[in-house]
Image (cartoon, rainbow, N blue to C red; front, side, top):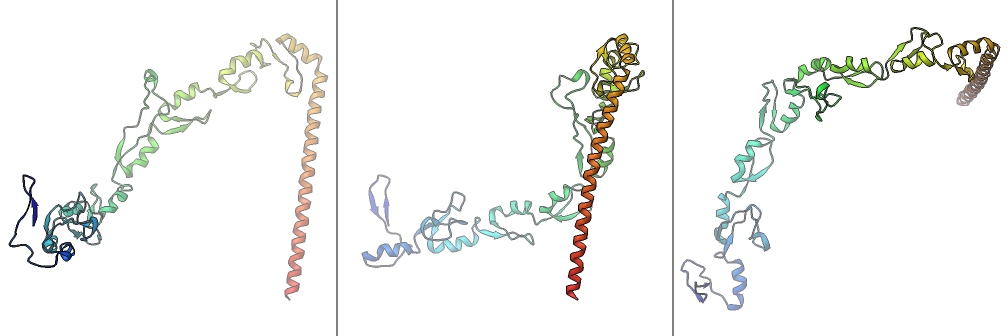
Length: 316
C-alpha cells in the first residue's frame, strides 16, 4: 500500500491482513475499484451505493470508515440506519439513533386530552380536538371600541376583556361581557357595552321631540330649530316660511312670518294644490305602468297555456 510519510516522502508498505490478490498491472485499477479491502465510509442513511457521491454521504450521515467487505456488517447495527417506527399505524422510517425522539412526538401515538376530558385518540389529532374541547381554557379577548376611556384616552392600546375560562362557559360570558359590541339605538354604531349609556347620552345622531311643534330633530340642533325653524316656538328669531317645502322661499322674523302667512294664504293653498296634483299625475303614470305589466303577464300566461294544450293533443 502506498502512503505518504510525515516527511512527505512516499513509500510502499506491506499489510499482512490486506488483500492477497495478484493481477496484471493493467487490471489493478479495476480490481481496486471493487476490492473488499478498500476503505469506505458507511454514509448511512443517504449513501447506499458504492458509486459516485454515495460513499461520501452527507454531513448528517454516518462518518465511520470501514473495509468494504465489512461495511454491510457494520450497517446492520449502524446507529444511522433507517428503522421503522414502533408505533402501530406509523409508516415512518427514521434513523435508529433518533427513534426515541420520533416516538416521543409521533402523530400515531395514543394520546389523552390534557384537559382531563374523556377524549382518547392519536397525538396527531390532539390539536384539532383541543380546538373544540369544551373544557379547554380559552380567553375572551374582546377589545374596547375606543382607545382608552375617560382619563385614559392617551393610551394607544385598546382595553381588553381579561376573562379566561372553559370553552363551554364562554357563550354565557359572551352574552354578558362588558366588552361586547352593542348597536347604538341612535346611530347604529357598534359600541362597547360598558360605554353604551355614556355614548347614547352624547350621540351626535340622538333625536328628541320639539316641545312646541312636535317635530323630531337632532338634539344638537334643537336650539337652532327653535330659533329658526319652529313656528310655534316663542324663541323663534328668524326662519323660513312653514310652506317652504311646497316651494315658498320667504324667510324673516317671527312677526314677518305671521304677516306673510295671513297675506299669502291663497298662494300657499295654490302651492299645496299643485303639489297634490303633481303627486296624482305621478300615481296615474305608475298605475298605468302596473296595468300594462299585468296585461302583458296575462297574455304570456295565455300563450303558455295554449302551447301546453297543443302538446297534449299531439301526444294523444
